[in-house]
Image (cartoon, rainbow, N blue to C red; front, side):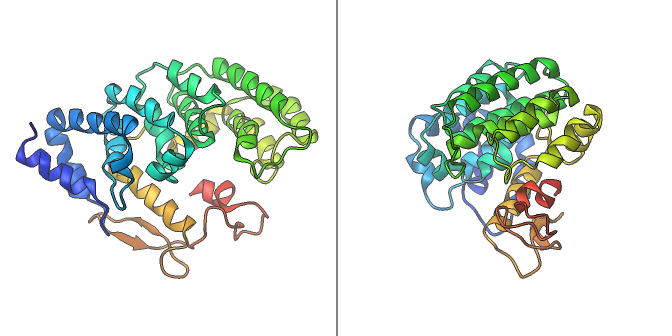
Length: 307
């Protein structure tokens, strides 16, 4: 049975408010023993009966994912995998763009070195495309953190990319998200592979099997010809690693969601302030809008990737 303090924290984490519930996140550590099982049960219940979590402004499952990831709670691994196998429409209602911003890192944070279920998720064409991409991100994060063999993952990703490319129609329609999977696998290869893969990726570009609007050829060349250690260190510095602070992970999602939805005052976006509210300080642009730097690429694949 939840203590009064645990219940108060659960209440604060359950519904979206204007400000991030930083105090509840900070207090959560003090009742972790009673709170963690409750958050795990929440994910388990939603995986089998997600209706209540689709109510407007209900966010306990989102906060649960981030907190359990911060705690490296391996008991959250199975229910999170089960959630990611839900139908696309349900996943979108439950997570929206949280799936792209937080869930991959969270999955890596709770897997405890057991990568089999993540691999199976990434490889399953019946799984939602964004859930598969989150699984790919999780594997890359584990490589960045030193807990998964890089060469092994590169081999697995090449095999997966070849399979996805072979399944594409003669003239791919990349507006169909399922057909983007080969591009996303190639993008992850640019995170972890070396220059000897460049001819293969060039051939994929030449044959039109990759979406050049999502994956820039020149950026791909630059990544593959740079030392992996530099790419890894830059990614970890940018926060593309295990979730260390749940509130910060949620704040990053709020920031990107606000950008994607064009929210905030002109010329400004949101970021977390120490007191738990949000202040404004950077240029506003939607994640899928053209990047204001003039590159011609989408913001999320250009300057947005750096922020």
